[in-house]
Image (cartoon, rainbow, N blue to C red; front, top):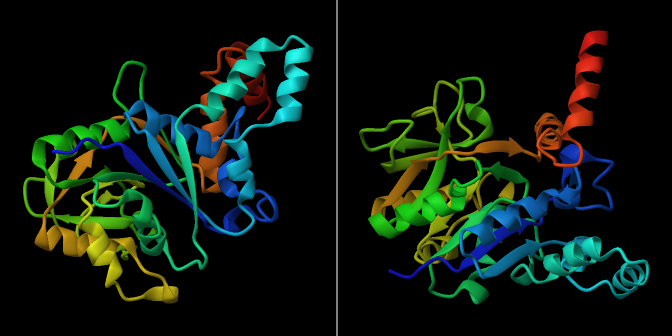
Length: 295
């Protein structure tokens, strides 16, 4: 069984939910406290032992590449002013992993974005982490990507993270139909998947929040995938074929998840992660208490 050393982060979306802020700034580069959303995603991948990170970017996303590149003027200024702690932080960003940028020339959906990584990923199993989903594990606990990698190692099957959602939320997600024995604690086999069903159509309450580990066989299914709604190639269509032919596991996970691609989720991430920030947490907590008393 090959270990998971490559990860793909789709980050080519237009970020329309955050306009006008994202007109010139990629959604993935919006700050959560003092780090871009994408930085949290990359940190999770690295903690899982990932060595090569393939970022699928679109037009006007060059700031993502710049973030992981050298900044000579900034580094020189920090060194001359003695701000060595900040200089070390900047250098560590550049040395985190092998960052490989691949351009998705057309916005043809998540399935197409993942397929764009094939020349880099090759025939290896790989992780996929959506670029606007932040997953924070408790200190000492494995990340969500690590949890999926462990299940892949033990089962030999592609593995996807799932979480329970209410009936009013299923239309926002891909929803899995379990073969049998589905619980909120243990991995189970997937029979099929439905992309954003109505509450009446949903085969379960297990939703896909954006963490996957795939065998390279997924590329064969994506290669032959037909565009669907909005002329996009849906990843769930190829995952259905993977479930039917090679097998697919769904894994409930242990971590705090923030949908940072949603305005409310983004605000929640900023507030809750600020309350954990070593420099800010005490003063920020006092501020929130004062603010709450005024509401």
